[in-house]
Amino acid sequence: QTQLLLDRIMHDDKKLFLPKCITKRDMTLFEIPKNTSISELPKNQWNIPEPQVGNNALEDDHLDLVLVPGLAFSMKTRARLGQGAGYYDTWLSTLQKVRISRNLPMPLTIGLCLDEQLFHENDEIPLQPHDFLIHHLVAPSFSSLSSSFSS
Image (cartoon, rainbow, N blue to C red):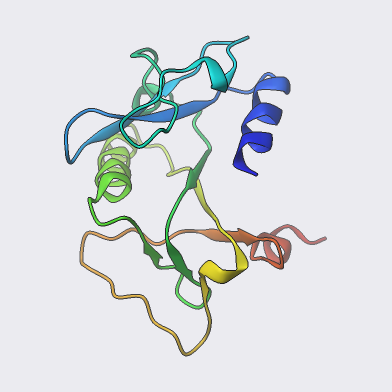
């Protein structure tokens, strides 16, 4: 459950940024204040908790990880199929421009998904020029992180 992960991030005193839809095509990530329960946040039209306007993730030079949702992910190419509105691709593009201007690396991106959302070797997810590839995938039966962090 994503909720358990978010709770753990807050418990471990890490900064947590959650998305807030700004327009029909744009979102940004705002920091959740310490000692705030995710369940206390107002919900948007999709019943997803959204933060109030606050510290913007685009301005945080220490942002090092972005968890990216999706409907499907390619195990082979790390392509991601979103909901179709381009929220995350647009936000990641903006983040990339900000990071380049500050001479900072992009944060690690991880797609969290269920096993059923993984496309295997012969399955392809259609890509558009504006689509961002995910660095790693984590599912109940698969993690591309294990090969990167093995000793």
